[in-house]
Picture (cartoon, rainbow, N blue to C red):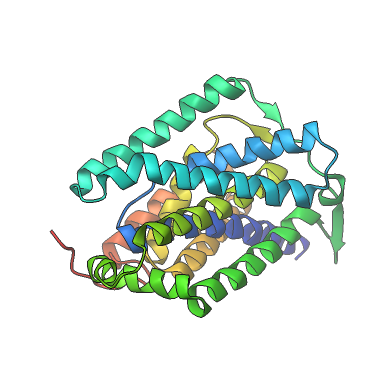
Length: 295
């Protein structure tokens, strides 16, 4: 029972991280029908920004987290302006190639800027505590991650459903061309979407680094791919679906390892197996809609 409690806490924690990062994928796709493959690399950049914020300043970790997420959000806007906006009217394959190129650029830029050796992440002392729940021992950060994810989701839901920008985002997800003809500044709305997605990815990068405190310029590749899979499982374009997909993927990963320790080396394969199963039986994802693609 104690092991079950501990594994549930770890699974929900990991799933919350996947959900937080998957939201960025699903928001961008919902509006632009674009898979931002550089999203995982923004997650990496955010982690490095916060690493230097913690090591070079004496600021509290929460301040470093907010400032680092803001910096990464601005970087997300710059990425959209340079890599995606000039190609907005182009064919899908052209934009897809640009997204892949942006990912490789950020990885290699990270190698040049930060070096290829792993860097230890200084876990804040307040997050490094171990808490006893019954007879289980759970890291405090595993408990705080779902709380932070929940708070950010509440704020995001408010932005999307209660503000004019959020109303424009929802309208653009239905008909981008019609919204642009109604006098709405679509460039501002797209930039805001990239900012929010990159902000959340950066928060996820900080939390990921507190659980796995070793940073590499390629660290965003596998988590980024898994979060993309989580978004597809939930129904890409659906924010709540991304959350459910992330939680499902995180719990599955931890529970399979807990019950079948011999499969630990194959944990990354579980996400792809689940993706194949979902695509075979529910191609639009758990909460996806059948939408006709425009050619």
